[in-house]
Image (tube, rainbow, N blue to C red):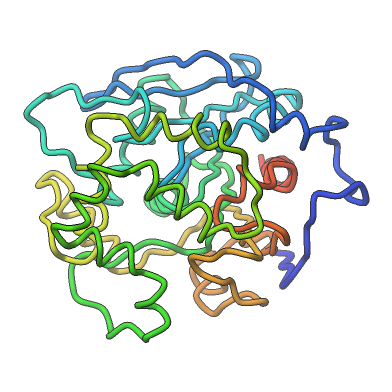
Length: 332
């Protein structure tokens, strides 16, 4: 195992990568492929698909508050390299819908990870690679931990993110409480009202706060913010942040899975970790952490993407695409 403790990536011309000329500029203007919809047992899942149908599949998983357009600059690079890039809209976002109108709108970690497996099964995909950040990073982390034989490689932004939703954790330090203000907000009635009535302004504020060096345009934000009009968006977001704080029940079918996840299972899959150097939600340590060293048994590399905040693939698609290609090249 080769472990890179810190490698600064800027996406500049000095990187020895097989990326198309002008990828960064392309990422700002390229339109995503048309949305496809595939039904699983619980959801009609929307996604953008790029690359050859027989290419090795890579699921690209976004976070909150973002959507599948986060990978508009990543997917074309993977497609050009011959891979099948599938940028997924998570439950509660964009065109993805619950099939049962009476089903509770949940978004716990076990659910969004099971959605990945369900989508792979519906598409008749046996083995695949994963790339994710924030919610998508957690979904990828859980999927890889529980289904290592199906995951060829993973690129995870934000490190190990599997949560213990069964027993209370230690008292949070003041700095952590400050950074997690939005979670406490969503655990209060005022947060539900704020997200319901002014979600686009609230989420745009988070983009600015979590990625302070990202000069995104209003047009780019509006393209993604349309996904927040999903009728299940508010319920899924509120459930996600309440469930992880032990303030909302999970789905009965996933209770045993959450118990397994509470034990913090290792990720026994070849993995590259990326951290945004300017992440306003959680400033990354300069070097690999004890948790990263312990929980990722096949860690290929761990890198800081300088000039990027929380939404790494949206901000710096080149190093993300390069990491996916590197992880795939290092595995079979």
